Image 1 (cartoon, rainbow, N blue to C red):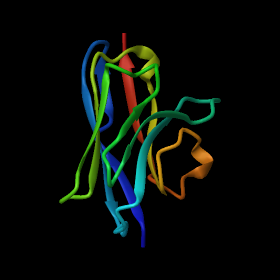
Image 2: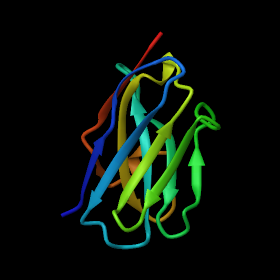
Image 3: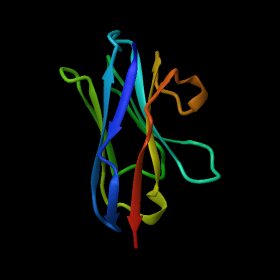
Image 4: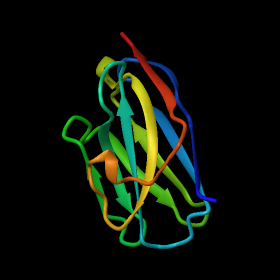
Length: 123
């Protein structure tokens, strides 16, 4: 059974860093794409970053480009989101999600979702 479990969220000061992890299980095909989304109260989920499992191509929202880095560990089937130079507007619940095929920035194409992890950036 496919399952995604996020970890690594927490409280950090402005300018600080956090690394989120998304552990995948039950996803054995190399044709998966994994993405990070985030949501603030009252808002739709926003695409943050994504990575193709087979070609490792990476994608970023303009709002995080240059500050966030997505990577993966094939052996451990874990996807990471290294977040640096954090801003108060990065405060959100962060979700990882998986789909077949290429990375897209529309959440409705993603089949499997983690439970989310809270990131809070304090001023």
